[in-house]
Image 1 (cartoon, helix red, strand yellow):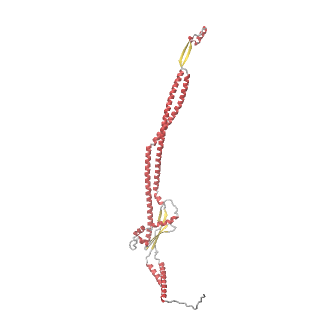
Image 2 (cartoon, helix red, strand yellow):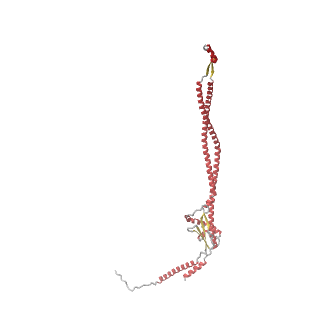
Image 3 (tube, helix red, strand yellow):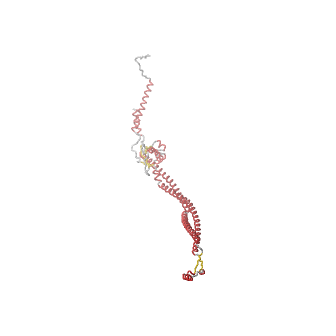
Length: 402
């Protein structure tokens, strides 16, 4: 009867206990859909509890209490009371990418609203976190882009300054002029040397020819050179009179011509020798100027190439920083995790507590155990107090041999 009474009491008490409803919803943790997709590694399944604090945190609980006025009657909840009553339960489901959110509350619609609020709060927090990361990345990359742009402007300024200071085009023109002059001087020197050799040989030949030529010619002319006069003398039978001949000395025109040619050749040799000497001196100066200009051009070109290289490197840096800045949102989002609510929590139709049948059975079993223990203790105490002992008499003795 006591056991039955305990079961009835448990049933009655369970009927009058406040009903508690459970609303459940799930969050899906997935990779970002932006950027190249990769297979989720197995170790990341073990990191899913990392996302539980996205839901189970005091700030979100406090906002939920304020949002649904749970700090007022009849609930009068605080964050500590909210936790002590185990209203919120968050756990990661094993071998899945799901985080389950369960709310147990006496009001069924409010339980569903709370579950959806916590789920949406986690989604909003994750989106805010991703947006913050994106803004931080964009801010960092924007700073890098500004620095790269400033470096590009400075590199362009240095390159312009080097170009203006070196005047490389003018020096190239000057070098071309000197090279053309060198070529002309080389050609002229070779021509003069060749003509010098020719004229020197000609002068030596004329000098030799001049030494063999007489200065004058002596001519003897006889009046008997006439054929008729010669025959008359022969008929007279007398010898020719020396007075019948005359002597004449004339200048050697050939030698004079050779002498003039010799003098002209010597003058040409002297002129060509002097011209060759002047050409050699000028050619040496031109070669020195060309060598100095080449060294200067090499240094200036090296400085200009360095300025061009710095400008090219700065421009490539700006292009790279610009691409990174433009792709900052995509890059940051592709490395983040998306959190989404699979389905909103529905209003529970049946309470999860109290469980009438379970409470009745537990009350009955507890009453049975307690009352049975009490009855046993009572009977034992009565027997001990009355002194009634059962004595067993032996019919015969048992001998024991020693």
